Structure formats: structure tokens, C-alpha cells
Image (cartoon, rainbow over all chains, first blue to last red; front, top):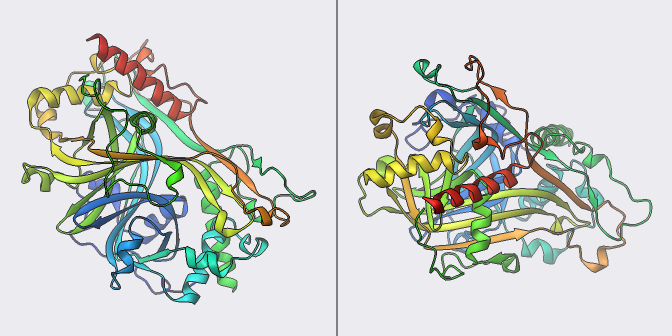
Length: 246
Length: 246
């Protein structure tokens, strides 16, 4: 774990790029607000531009403080030729509820989302890349990387890891009941929130598990019936704790 | 509902833009495969380019055949000045499971995702916009638009709807257990899938509901405990059925 954020200000800088426009009262530039949303997720969407064309690629991400990481993608081939990196925007969103108002205009969603801006670069440094390939396992399953069959040189070579320091970011959260216009209160239609949650199910073991092999502590956060965002946040806390002891 | 897809070919055309690169065996250009993923979702991420900078914006979307719609966003101001529209990529992803292998390299996710490419334009035509503002309610809650307090001219004016005909698209699905290397089978670590599902919770009615007002048939798909993707797919089927009768 790097200590890049130890002396960092508590908010990200604001520019035309990350300034909140619509519903800015729902937004924030706080690092803690952004990190809370990143910590609770596993799947992000990254926007790149390749020859003027935007791409929106879903992928696994993880972060250590201000540094975001993800695996190779449609941008990898482009990045190979761009030593200086390329601008990217990585967004993480959690859907929390459907908001049904008495007018179409006030229908909404409850959600938490973070948009992060920076310059995406391929991790070329062997040590940095090796650390990231441990991070992508241990951030989700703290301690698991050491339990696995170790990575081969060929596998490392076949894996592209992209890193991006967050230069600017914003968080946006809606977490409340309906915001109807006062004069709509008497309109006779059901209104309210239908909450949704992403929940962990019963594990499906791999066929051919070695006898006596059981889930280790590394998977302790992922109990059936639990919210995935809470499990991911717990795993991140454990990972940061382990890293701090290294 | 338009009939644009009646005579459409069963697959989307393939170009350098949507050709699948990584794990192409998981992919498809079938319209039905793409639509199945769109039908099961409500929240998408749209990538745009504004002055060379990519943006990845989360937003509600809906579709009628090849036409995708979403609400105004960071691109709206730019689009106001671009009568010809701007290239965009709209992606929908469903996370279905965490795939834990015996090596870090074979860790993965189970997921369904669709990437759609086209040219985003503001809906200026009043009839098209009015139809879309019914669609954004009825696609999710079939029949609800007619039950609501009707939209005002001011609200319609304050709402930007963006439309994009899908020119190219691809779907990608991973839905299986671990893909370990054969020689890793004896490595003594737990491996398998931890499934996740987005589930509908107990409704939270708006304070001050009129006495006797109950949920109507428009919300029938959204029963507590049900999978959101299944409810959204059912709602889309009902919406298409209603539209076909119009």
C-alpha cells in the first residue's frame, strides 16, 4: 500500500471536467465520499477515445488510495503506442432503488456513483505490475493471492494492467423517498421507493475440488444473503489493514 | 412502438468498432442477445467525447427495438450545438457472480454486457419527444404514464431526451463455473462461483399517500424477493405487447 493519500487534501480539485451540473445538490468532491463508492464495487465502466470514437468498457477495477487499476481492454493496443497515456473516465455506480413519483417528471433512481478522471497508462514497471497482480486478488479476497497457484511469467506477460491516478473526481448520491411537487400530493396514484440490493447467493463449488479443501478466511466477507457492497467494503478495509502492516 | 426491427437482420453489422477482441468466444452480434441484456436493465453507462475528453455517465435508459433513449446529461449542452449528433457508446452490464479459480490468472466474473454504438442526438421533434416521455415511464411500469399527474409544458421543456439508433453492437456473456488449467486441479484451494443477484426489496411508500391508494397493475412485476433483471424483462414484454396493440 502506498501512502500517497496521507497528506492529500480531503477533496478532489474541481474543474470543468468534474464539476457537477445536473442535481449538483446530490454531489460531492470529497475523497471519502468517492472512495466509499469505489470500495463498495467490483465492476466499473471506463470511457476511452480511440480515433475520435468513444468506448464504454465494463471491467473489474480496484484502487489503492488515488491509484485506480484495471485489466487490459479495448484500449490496450492503443495504449501500447501511447507512452504518455490517454485520458480516461472510470465510473462506478450502485443502483439502490426505483423512485416512483406522482408525476413522470419526478420519477428517479436511488443510486451512488463516482466518476474519476485521469490519464490511463499501462503498468510497465515489473515490480509495480507484480504488486498490482496481487492487489487484484487480495483487494477482493484478502490473503488469497498467497494461497493460489503462483502466477507464471507467461501469465504475467499475457496480462495488461492499466493504472490511473485520480486527478479529479466527483461522487453523486440519491438516497431518499420521493420528491414530489407539493401540489401533486393529492394525486391518487401509488408513490414511493422500491429498493433493490445486490445479494450474495449460495456458493457453487468447482467440480473436482480436492477432498478437505474448504473456503478460507480470505472469503469470509462473502456470506450468503449478505449485501455485496458491504462485503466488498469489508474486504477493502481488511486489505488496507494488511497492506498497512506490510 | 415503431416497427423498425421487423425486417431487420438477426445480427448487427461488425466493424473495427464493435468487433470482439478479448474472450471473443463469449461474444455475439445477435440482436436477440443484445436486446435480452438491454431488456433486463435500467441503468446504463454512456461514453461521450467532449473536446477530446471522454466522459462515462451513468443514467437511466430504455429502448424500442434499435432505438435507445436516455435523459439529458453532461453531453446535452454540447449536443445542443451539434445538430448532426455525436458518436456515443452505451453499455449495459449485469454482474452475476464472482469466479474464484485456483490461479489468479483464471479469476473472473460471471456477467452479461452489451455495448451499443451509434450517433446520439437530442429529440427535437415534439411528437417523438412526447412519445419518449411516456416510454420512460411505461417501459418500466407498463400503463403507469396514464395514471400519473400529466406532464406540463414546462416540465417537457426542462427535460432533454437523447436518442440513438444502434448502428453496431455486441453482447458478451460469461455464465459458467471456473475455467482452471487442468494441471491446477490438485492445487489445494477453494475454487468455484459466488453468485450475486440484484433483488427487489420491500416497498417504502411515500409519506402522505392518499387513503385507499394502492399499487396498480403497472407495478405488478416488482414483487419483493424477485430478481430485478427478471422484473425488468417482464415489464419490457408487457410494454412491447401494449405498444403492438396501439
